[in-house]
Image 1: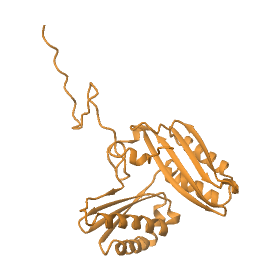
Image 2: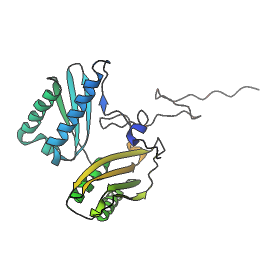
Image 3: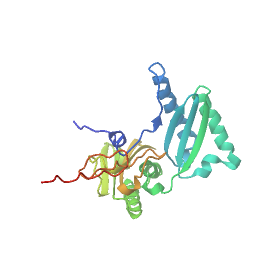
Length: 245
């Protein structure tokens, strides 16, 4: 029996950060989780064509801040900002009337974002493109953009087969058990005529991209002292003077 774990949750507090950031009491904890789930579903449903990579939710008091990372920010904002105002009102209703702020963050390189790559493969499968062609093209594009490695796995009735199976292609290095590795993970489903096909994507990016916390849910590795001890304060560790004979 395989023991599988989500690569994002596996690296929390090491190289990844939470995508829902708030504190809650025991009595309202479940309701806030349900609100977060509903907010993400509404954003992805209303902005299907905007290439949404991830959604970061922060709560402070009666205010909710939603950071939408999109490869097409113009579609999210709309003409003269009308679409984003409509989105704010819809999300406010989903959050029990709380004040909602929406931030739009542009994804610079969608070809190296794991969720967007999985979504692109899913869209091609729905258009009846060969799964091998879609996977190999996505892998080649990501490798040309300078990633260290990429792995794509599809499961289901691929190619319209009667029996479901799993196919995967990989190139470069994707160390899944190395916590310090900058692994991006994405999952998407394709609704084909033969049924649902699941697409999983792992992308290993250069570690140099992790430089401090950011709104994308990633954080840089901690500095280490000369003997390998952690140096969380960011200052240089002074060497001890050698003992006098």
